[in-house]
Image (cartoon, rainbow, N blue to C red):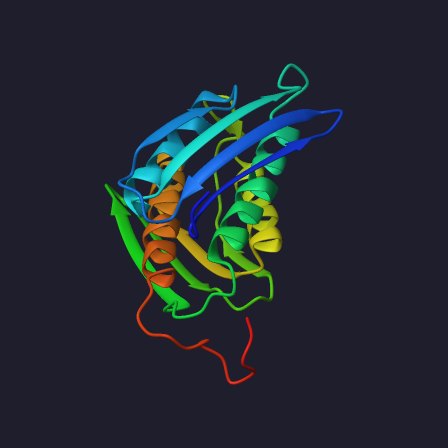
Length: 193
C-alpha cells in the first residue's frame, strides 16, 4: 500500500472485518457491514471526506449491532492512524458544521496522538433502521480511541436520521481538512504526534 493508503483486518469471535482506506481518494466506497443504515452512514463518510473506503464486515448482528459497530470503529480508527504515518505536514486540527434539514452537526477534531471524545447528542428513537442510536456514540468513542484523535461533537435537531447523517458528514469533512498536507513539519511543540 502507498503512504496514505492502508489495508487492515481484525478478527474476533464476534466479528471479521477488513478495511481498505485511501486518504487521498475520490470518495469511492464499497461497504458491507450487515447493518444497512450504518453502511449508509459510512458511505456518507467516504463520499464527504473524499476517502476511498472498502469495508467488509461480518458479525453477530443476529444478536444485535453492537459488536459490528464497535469493531468497525476500532479498525477504521487504526487504519486512519496508520495511513497518517508520522503525521508530518498535516493540518492536524479542523472542524465542520453540517446542516441536514432541521438538524445541525458540529464536529471538531484534533489529530493529536491523544484520544478523547466529547459528545452532546440526544436521540428520541432506540434505532434508526438496524442501527441502535446508542451505538452512534460508541462508534465515535471506539474510533477516536484507536485513531488516537480528539473528537468533540454536538448535534441539534428533531429527526434522529438527519442528526446522525449530518454527524457522519461533519466528521468526514473535518477529518478530510485535518489530514491535508500543508507543510513539512510535525504540527506539535513536542515534535511528535
